[in-house]
Length: 137
Image 1: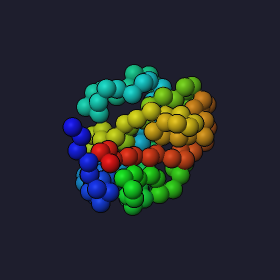
Image 2 (image 1 turned 90 degrees about the vertical axis):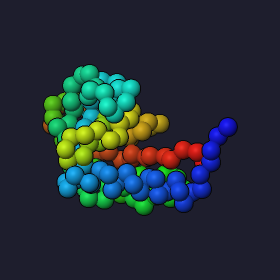
Image 3 (image 1 turned 45 degrees about the vertical axis):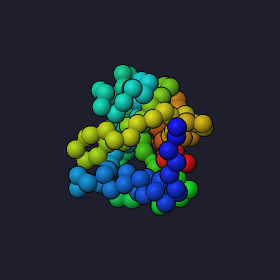
Image 4 (image 1 turned 120 degrees about the vertical axis):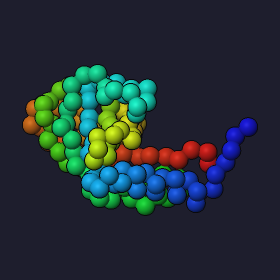
């Protein structure tokens, strides 16, 4: 058996993400790693080096949910520090450094889309998309 939700409910679930991320009183931060995505957000940060010390996201990082999905309101720009090859995963943490979202990184077909996954130290990084989908359509 599978439960199905109307788009209105799926959209409301997605809108709650932004509320939770901003609940600590500060803006969320995005971190990228060379290590693979852990099994859950409760697990330790991915093995491998941290590629960004934390990209500050805006107070409204995601667009209004529609048709059971949300995405970035605008591309995010940052500088790799330190650099590393093969960026593989990301985490979005609230202002208390609690992980709420994690996923895979690539140039297409992944949860977070970058202009390149091979980053040198101090290289400009452009995150063009993070798309989150609600299930049970």
